[in-house]
Length: 271
Image (tube, rainbow, N blue to C red; front, side):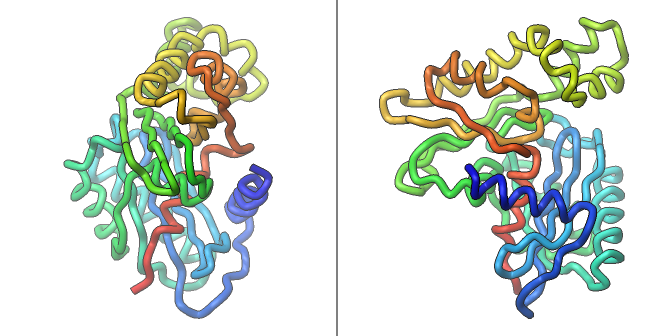
């Protein structure tokens, strides 16, 4: 996890300052269309972080694009901001889908292509996350705004992918009802690290449901570690709840939000 944290810290740094790219083959872009955020990560050919941009968005629901025009506008804006920072055109990208939403691949692809990018690879989100983790045996759980997805890996290969429509949006809805505030105010509360200890008992039942979903698919006898990622996993203490419910050691990096978009960028092939 030290390797993962050090690498993601460089990706996080590239949000503020673009880093020097190595090699001459071009830049790789990962386009992550999320329920709560849209993120573009740029890596060089050797997967060194170069730049990153993100924007809050509500143009997807449970991993499916419900506002095509809005998604296109945001991706195009993020691409233009990155190109202005880097002084070069971004051409190739990879995209990823929550498992179970394969029927929406074309819409995701149209969004990226409409923004002026060439999609050179399409994969599922938990597999993208494992480009960062590089685990041989275990379970990668990606909890985004709309879905809880998991990939079971054996000998470095994904042998099973599952996805359920429960994610960070559901936590926000619970907080909104509990505190009698708007969805936007509840989202701000959820993202305030100083209030995580306060809100954890409120959202615990939803987190336990997510952990139960994972437990349903995982063979405890042959799984020693669950690796968490996704924006919802920024919630302090979420790994402890997962470990208690599943009975399996559960860990997460310091910044689980950037795991999947960076892994998507790693899987971009340069044409």
